[in-house]
Amino acid sequence: QVHLVESGGGSVQAGGSLRLSCVFSGLNYDRYMLGWFRQAPGKSREGVAGIDNLERTVYAEHLKGRFTLSKDNTKNTLYLTMNSLKPEDSAIYYCAADCRRHWYLLSPSEYHYWGQGKQVTVSE
View (cartoon, rainbow, N blue to C red):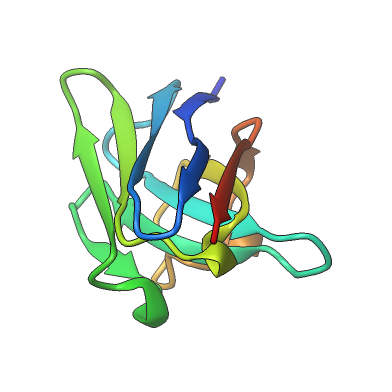
């Protein structure tokens, strides 16, 4: 069974940085994908960044350069480092996983397993 446990996030002023972590377990390490998603109030869930077991990594174009996804296989942990944060980055951030690969890593509908979500709040 796949488990995802998130930590990190919190509140920061605009221009600051935060890091989210997601410890994952239960994945078939020959074939999986992991992703970060976010959802702001009144908006649909959007893909932030994703990676598969072949280490193929993709980012939402408008976040590329500020957000960095990384993965430590020795710790089974996925990270999202967020720099130069803006108020519009405020949202609940979710870690997600699935036991297969899909060509489009940023589609929420392609993921079956989700973390509990962590609030990120960026103030002016």
